[in-house]
Image (cartoon, rainbow, N blue to C red):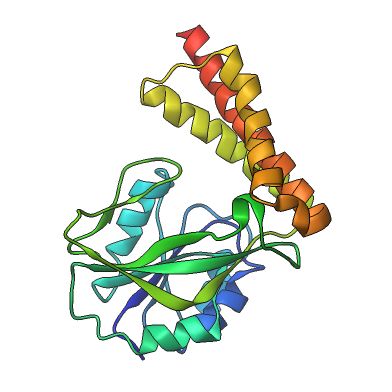
Length: 251
């Protein structure tokens, strides 16, 4: 066991929780499930598997993650989403870390899946994020969406072997629902930051996004899945700027 806490923010994830909890139980004795208003069996499933369950109102991604991390037993936090599962190589690497420098953060590579298809190229290809950090020196910012960890240039960034298997979209209906929510939240975030939008951003940015991801980032090599990911990400971009334009005009 490693002296780190795994903290997972969830809402209506009863179908995914058993898989991820079983996958990480060998890493730590402290798994924190923070529920933000589920109306399915998420809480009951988590409790039945013997992990710590807390409930918090949704405050946006950044603030909610910071609050959830206060329930952790250890200062070292491995922050996962309910659809993210470390593979065996990454788990072995985690177990061997000394975790003796609180000004060190750990970067992890991702394998993204659309259903059962591994998406190797395009927007989802070569994805990586810092997910292991010490909460005494690192916090999430207050962004409601696309939150980021805050640390300075004196920190050491260490890349870990292995992958996090990101099984975010089980089907196209779920994909569409998530992109719609992210698009609206992204536009609201831009508006709150004082940004302005115009027709050129609303229509040209999605087209450019599609061209870059499908052609320049080789999304077409993923076949049908590559087309779907490029199309949905372009739609997300459109919704983001559509929301920003609408809010700007209303103001």
